[in-house]
Length: 97
Image 1: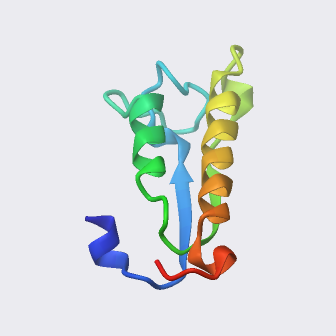
Image 2: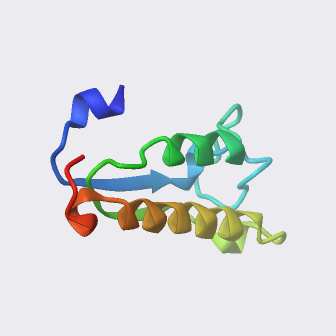
Image 3: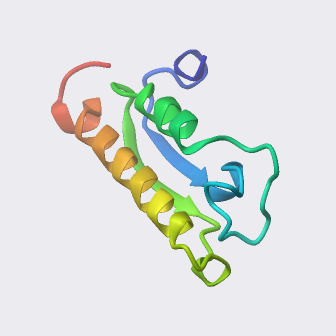
């Protein structure tokens, strides 16, 4: 569905860490009970491969609220996945979407 809405245009992907359930990312200012799992988020992001992703960020990470470092690790993994998407982006590869 995201592909239909966005089309081939350049796309900036912003991920808000508080969409994850606090069991996976407690270190945020606004934890959301019943949020997504890390596996669900990674599957969603990986499903965007081939879209024209030109940039991205991960927001709302607040490590001071997480003594386990799970939130920072989840945020780093999400950012890695966004950067990986950019490698396959038509803007980088020169191939059409």
